[in-house]
Image (cartoon, rainbow over all chains, first blue to last red; front, side, top):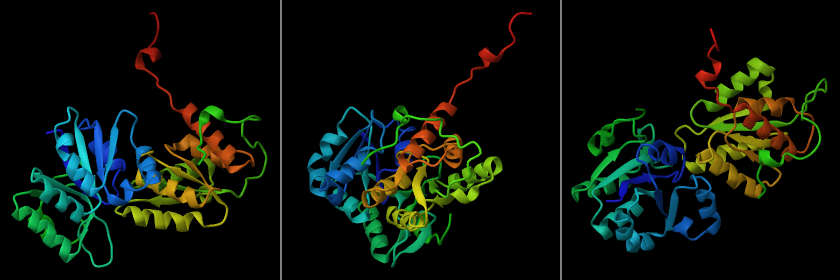
Length: 163
Length: 155
């Protein structure tokens, strides 16, 4: 499978993704799935300028990503798929049925969310959505950078605060 | 949006102020973890003018909070420039968004210590020219020295 990592990260393309994961995974392309970014040339240009020229970037809406996912998964190159939130990734998982692992890379503070890890804040609805993913056989782990130990969903949800 | 580049550094002098009194221009230094406070402490040790720079860390912040907090910092008096550590970083992304609403600001990505020192010491110029001189100085400071070149020659 050409997609090495399916990551939820509300910063989307940033240093941890491009450098932190990009180098050890030898990533050659990123798929950014976000309806707002997919609808804005300016946003796409902003994110495109954040990646090195040798790395490809595909911008897709949720609908577009569902249609193109098989092509990304069978690409000869190594890629990473990004969403900014849990519902987008969950819908993509449901639609495709081919995503086996999801990485929680960064979901930051917002009213209504409780801090679980240093870089993960979740609302009760978001926690339920992650549990639902796991109940469908998808492995959900939290790991901001490759050098960190991946935390299983149960361990993440039982954590309270900075780790 | 215009961008800083060391390759078109304008005309004129070196950008050094000599005995000229310091300008009141300031800059935001934004980056990962303790990059900003660390590099500003180095500026303080060398140039003694840490007040020129406002530090900001994106640690554990969402993209929206990075942008919000950077917006507040660049609204302080005399802030003309944003220095960031990494072109792909969330601080750089936020800075680009801020430049869209504040075209008077200049962004320099990939900043190093030499870049910031040039910003401190350069003579009064437009923010764009000041940034270009700083970028030029920062690029010049990057160099490779291989051990074989330093080894004693002959017997």
